[in-house]
Length: 336
Image 1 (cartoon, rainbow, N blue to C red):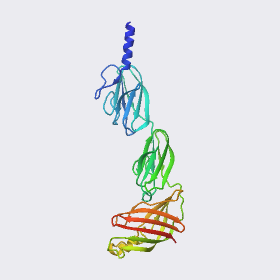
Image 2 (image 1 turned 90 degrees about the vertical axis):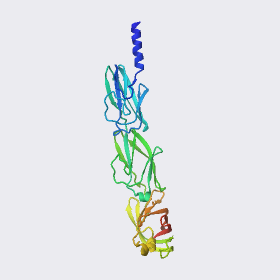
Image 3 (image 1 turned 90 degrees about the horizontal axis):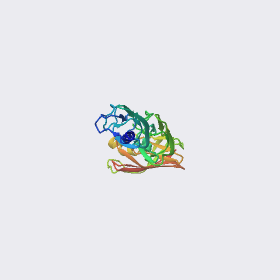
Image 4 (image 1 turned 30 degrees about the vertical axis):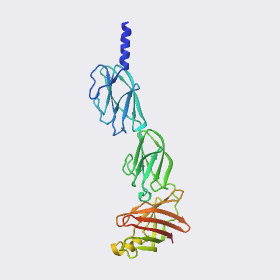
């Protein structure tokens, strides 16, 4: 009878272990396991910890290796009688991230367990001109993970400076990206994440269909300005010679976006005697031409309302607007 009572008591103790109270250390017979995580090497989020299937607490802050048995918002300590226990952890950062293992306790033993998720990284970046593309939004498994707003040249893998770094469990993921100007995109692609490895993924214009844009053009503009300083506030059929240069990587530069209009209006008034170069991009098998708004010679933004391309005759048409000076115009560039 006494043997059965003792055995029953042990089983009851084994079924009712738990974490040490917040801010305390172990002080009763049994063994302890202390759980912690380091966000400099692991994506943290809120980490929930389970022992034998029962939640024992959450870690909400990172820490350095703690003193065994300590309990705080950075660490969770579990106390239980001698035995072998299974533990698991999940992160709010990503529902697919998990970690698990076992630990054993003996009288006054204490184990320190660092939670490490099996993750890898991939960094998205581009050296394409954001002046031509606008910003690029990246989606992974149909969820937006960020926007690239500036071009970069071979960034360090894992950075978020002019790039987007995604952390995930090992596996294959579907991704796609879209230019804010529309038309240019990277649809239905995939990448693979390897544990403890960072890979870089450069957004390039891989499916270019490039006409021979480079050459000399006649620019013909219809434009108007409310500025009475301009000798001819309304221009109809104003002409100028410009050139288009191939910059490579699907990018082209127009030597003077305004086709001489700003020099005509503001040369005498404000000494605006410079050309206003601007770049555009021609990419994708759908023959998409794209150009972002840009800064003119006055230091103000010129908005590109539309840009289009025709092959017969070979022309590029720009419809533009200067929101500061309230100027607007349409300029047609015809290859000579």
